[in-house]
Image (cartoon, rainbow, N blue to C red):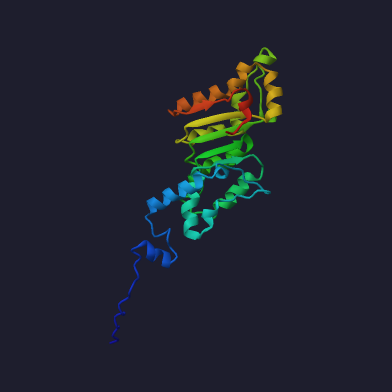
Length: 240
């Protein structure tokens, strides 16, 4: 019969003081996770460059320098970064770049950490199904994206064909965002907006030519209390 010798007792060096943590090169990670999260938020949220991030081919998705300390700090800080940053998707390759970055994160973190998202209408259906915790969503439409109701009696009084737009961009997927609090509708860029809005009644543009009311009705059907905004005049094309 083979006798298995017991393993010798193992000794562990417990880090009990800040001085011990410094000697072991682990001054930050020795702190409780709740305190580390507060530190991460202070560092990330006080840097104005982190408030808006627009990934693309020429500008890949980048994180603050604190995220690059080591792998553990990366996994702990990136969710804080995503929760406090407006992610802007305007370039066609932006959703692809964002997905590529998310592959570096644990599955329970990745897209679920995004709280604020701004996107052109054509890109939104590629991202919305993954971002289930969004609280603020901004949609930008250009004149080429719009379809008009042919029953309008006058050019100035025309309204959007909301049924066609809902089908074209699968807008009803937005109703699945149960944590959504605010939806902002934007139109075009500065020049396009000024020319286009002046060609229609400004009162119509303030309601986004009927699309804002369509969203309000759809949200009520789902018993969702979502504020639908249409910025006025020069603010109509701003992400801020």
